[in-house]
Image 1 (cartoon, protein in one colour):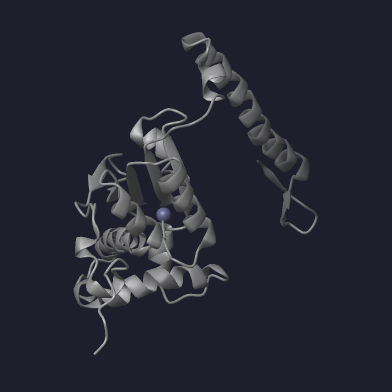
Image 2: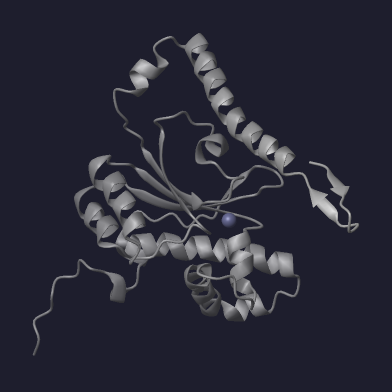
Length: 238
Ligand SMILES: [Zn+2]
């Protein structure tokens, strides 16, 4: 895009060039899609015929909406292998009907074996949650991450380097969201019926592309804490 000086000496924006750039980036998507179809069919003539038959993914990915962390690319998986839910800063709260619907469908209908909460270093949502600015509606969503900060304020306040502090909160946020998933009736009820369901926490390092497993995998309600355990037989009062 170029600009030129108008009569008042101010830079004039060339609207037609903006429109051309916009239509080019949009048209590129359609062209890329056609090229992808061609490539896939060259590899396997039955690819789309098989894809249309249905899905049986073993993994549910709950990741950040950030454009740099696409589930399939990061994990080298194909269409049909990962069921995906993404939101800003991969937050899992029990009042989010969207997340709960995805989780319920993945766990109880698709019978996934692994639920992965995938955050990433340098997460803008986490950094925004650490700031004291208003960003608009999103402030309400970021509040969940401020709550995570509050839980770990002793540790985080001691980290003087801001990037290091953001990245540590990224890890702590993923860990808390793993536990939030484990607290849901969806996960707890599934664990009563089967023993092949694990909830994991990962952080993607954008600088290397590599995933760090935070080793917070849960496969039973054992570490939940009594107050969150929803499968304790009621103790008779008195
Ligand atoms: Zn992010």
